[in-house]
Structures are given as structure tokens and as C-alpha cells.
Image (cartoon, rainbow, N blue to C red):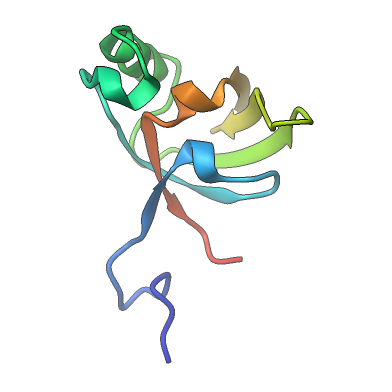
Length: 100
């Protein structure tokens, strides 16, 4: 049986906020203009800002670290740069996940 992550299947995208330390993938999309994504009216600003700092489709990502307890914020490598993001901000980034 084939996994949904196999090349013969449609790519599986998940919010960046759901990933844990060590996870890798590729940015598929950054959601803009939906305040419901991040829980307040700054949703459009956060989406735009994420794109400006490098969260663009096709860019490789890796979760480097999580603060415990709670896993917030998380350190994410995008390309060759590391950023700290709150999980509520990371909900605006959709990622195609690499197979484990």
C-alpha cells in the first residue's frame, strides 16, 4: 500500500504549527488576509510579514527547536536562516511534509 507522501499521490500539506522538532518539508503556501488563521485581526499583516522574511513557496524548512513546556515558540530554519515563531503565527504557513 502506498503512503500519501509517495510521489504518485497528491502532496499532503499541513500547517507549520503542527510540526515537531526535526520535521522537514517545503513551504507550499502562506495564507494571507484571514484573521481566523492566527486568532486576531492582524492575520493579513502576519501573512505578509512571513512572506517578506522568506516563507515563500518552494523554500525548504526544518523545525530546529521547541520551547517546553508547550512547544511555543518554535525555531524554524527557512533556507539558511533560523526564525523563532509563535505557533499561532505558524498556522498561516502550509507545508508539504517530507517522509520520515
